[in-house]
Image (cartoon, rainbow, N blue to C red):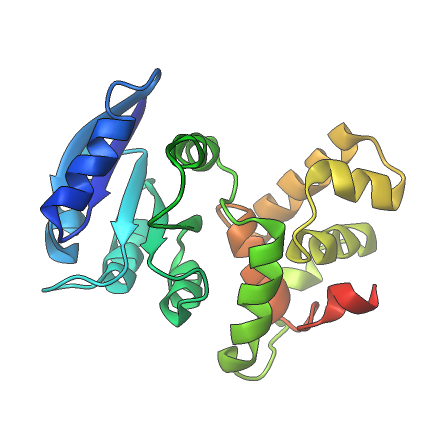
Length: 220
């Protein structure tokens, strides 16, 4: 059972998400919060698997709340944004969110998104990954390879570059002439070695370390 916490300052929005998600096979809404501070408190009390988090709220916004929840629990956070290129979303990914959805997403996509994040995958469509990261990677400052990339093999760096380009495991396998299972194993090992939670954080790592730069996919 996926335990879900809904966070939005609008009661009707929360009610709408609850009506879609609560009772869906394998999903249970265990709580609701109207601001980020309440979300942090309830995440600690209820131990949800997934937090559906609005980005703009009173008291404590979704960005700050995401950072606190990620630092103190195993919950995965999906950011809700009105626009799919909201600059706050990049900050939320850096804070540890596993992806984002726009608020007018279709119910089936919302349900699928919760399941995807609950199993440990990132919820970012490849097209949005490229646009989002290319738009805001330059704001991250000077690239810093750091020690985390030094532990990767050459093949793992190659796989990480393709993850950052938004390719799925199957697409990575086809590009590198590997089996999908081998590609998945490479991705899992990269996560373990670099100590990141999911593919979203791998994307951030690849850009901030300078391994991938905006516009790379267009030249690949």
